Length: 210
View 1 (spheres, rainbow, N blue to C red):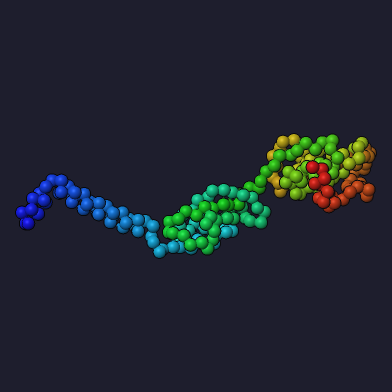
View 2: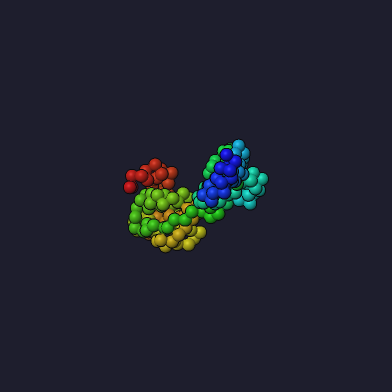
């Protein structure tokens, strides 16, 4: 029996088979240990709530939590300071593994822009509605001398006439110049005539133009 075992072990095919089994076991054991170390089973950290913070300040929180972050998008919100974080994926409070990348959306550093539409020779109601549809919110109506009453003449920003297609921040205070229908209208009477519709009422009717 002993001689048989010796001959069996000395058999090159059997020896190679035994070596293959040993190597396979070693590989499986090593792989399991590596996976356990890589995935850190049963170890989790909480995504910190860094909404409203700037990236530099938020980076410290991510570092302390052993997390990484990546800015994937930017939006514009008037209610959040420029450059501040507005959204996290996974969301704040979620439990994730250490080293996880948190995807961040930040508030844009500058206001969103829109182009000035062609408003000349439109009724001031329609011109106002088109500007609002573009996203402009601060629109003042100013009457100036002109032959045709309530006819839009143009749009100004800080006293400068804006051209069609010009890019302007949505928060810019625009002035919609409108003809009063009186070519001899004195300068001290410029404003909203008594028989014209107040600007406040335009918002409730602007959808009727589209």
